Length: 358
Image (cartoon, rainbow, N blue to C red; front, side, top):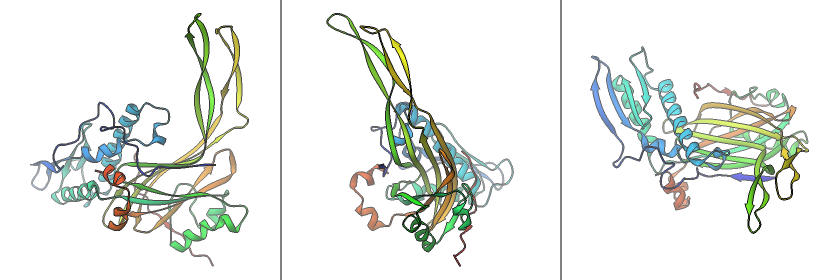
């Protein structure tokens, strides 16, 4: 079984992709302020530096798409994530149609609201844009009988359940204590705020998708050249984070389970090659189960949520995640290259507390 861990998104050159806005030439800050009522003001913030992190796309996010296309999608997703998060969590909360936030495609945040709301937004942006801010997440995948984790006190489906450290260790230990459970793997994921990290546990199965005919010399011989594609069989996770304050981390997680039906079906195709021939291509059938959730996690806290196992209706995965900001000492221990790399809508759901075993 292959284990893949990406510590940070893969930078796509000096810019994430052609066509995206360039970075600001000076440190981002509030760039404009206007009063709009006796109590409300309009502020604009430069956030291109934060969005640029999101446009550095991880290998898993490419998913066969050209790098430029994937980066533009990531840029748009980051705009939606940041504006949605602010509108649902700003303090004091927005009231009325005049209080709102939006982010332009070029990366300017426009906020209508009370001075206290504007200061909350400015504080959030300053906290997350530092080149010395990283979030570390530790993840564990546990497979077991469907319903077993719910009987242990974990909420069914993607609803996050808060765990104590004792709870987390107890669940991870299931793989060695009971044959019905299996721990697929544990991994550490390090990301800067708003950027996306990804990891996977499984196999990338290569197969011949089609043949391309190419003419070679001498003799104008037409040869079939196999075009290779890949089907993933396993589990994968992408994570985006924000630091809400000094002790709470916001997690936006997308988890998937994929199963390739074996044996992989094939079909013969006739080719006008030299000489004409029939060759086999593969037609894999992939079942995929996905879920997405967002929650706020206290420092050194942990959550757990469930995900169906693709291809096995009687089984399910438990994904255990804990996250926190890196300490200065841990940050210093990171490779220099990783430190320099850091230079759609869903409400934040309340989590349940896992009861202690009797």
